[in-house]
Amino acid sequence: MTIENLQDYMHTLGQNACTAANTLRLASTEQRTDAIKAMATQVRLAQQNILAANAKDMQAGTAKGLSGAMLDRLKLDETRVLAMADGLEAVAALPDPVGSEDERWTRPNGLTIAKVRTPIGVIGMIYESRPNVTADAASLCLKSANACILRGGSEAVHSNIAIHTALVAGLKSAGLPESCVQYVGTTERDAVGHMLAGLGGRIDLIIPRGGKGLVGRVQKDARVPVLAHLEGRNHTYIHKDANPDMARDIIVNAKMRRPGICGSTETLLLDKNAESMLPMLAEALQTAGCELRGDAAAQNLVPSINPASETDFMTEHLDAILNIKIVDDLAAALAHIETYGSNHTDAIITENQGAATEFLAKVDSAIVIHNASTQYADGGEFGFGAEIGIATGRLHARGPVGAQHLTSYKYQVLGNGQVRP
Image (spheres, rainbow, N blue to C red):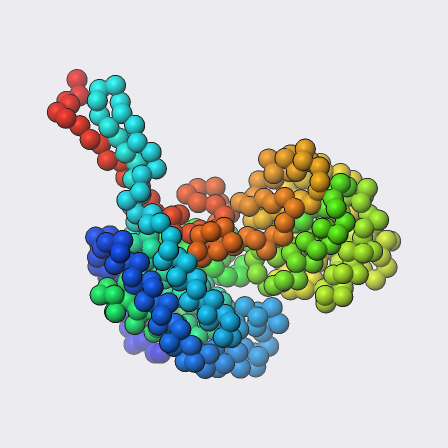
């Protein structure tokens, strides 16, 4: 789609979003919930249109030489489209965060104060590859009574437009304005710049979801608050007291279930007192199709492991590639994660509760896991219905960002005639 005056077009989106945000703020829980359910119905009805659109994107992506991991993120099939609709219904079934009380107390002077959840306003979502984000973002914003402006990547443009068309049909059937969920109808890169500038003060929060280049640009150039993670350089540490079979099953899943997602483990840290497990672990990973890159100690144990460079340990591969490092003990594992991690998701495999407790307390990541796969770093798996992204900062929200995290709050102060002396 060619836009003659991009600035006017983008600012109109912002103005419409502000109007829609006010409508949503006043809409009832039932109306917003019904809209999300209607969106799920329309996604199911539009399945063939969505799959046909995705086939165009897959063909173009293959021609462009996108990696296998990127194509997997882009691909939709019947199962994934139905899962998208199921995800919408899961969000619809969640408690309404808007109007809920975080806490309430009464002061000695008789004033009662309540901290109450409120919408943020207009959320700008900039994302790449995964077209299901279109539905996830729309549903979570609607659930939290926020309007949203969505800008997907050019590689998924046909898929995103087909999904957005279905979502709008659901909104209309529920009696809500189409502008509650708007999709930027151009792939011009300057559209992102307009969003980062805030559309004249109309965007309240930007959430980027994609590769390091996209997220880095957003964090560098945005003139409105940003909620994001830059990379998922995740670690799984196999402690000396780990169950070998459990360790094998978890690390294969953590790396190979979907190597291209941000919850994938990128580095295996193996305690030197458990190094006898490495041949078994390496065989299971290589059988699953994983390339292994290790330090000298790991290569000495399993000669088929390729050498790992310093750069590898600083890389989010998003592919079937796993770094391996032998570490002296838990303290060394913690030090490695502190140096090379990205504060996203890190896991320990051990039967030693003391070691697990220390790891969970000392690793400063948004998600820390004991005896489970890092691929559980997902809002749906947390019971949030879906997620709009993973946040690794320390302000407002951390980890999977669900509907409740897309709210701010206000204080309601209730008196009976008090005046301040």
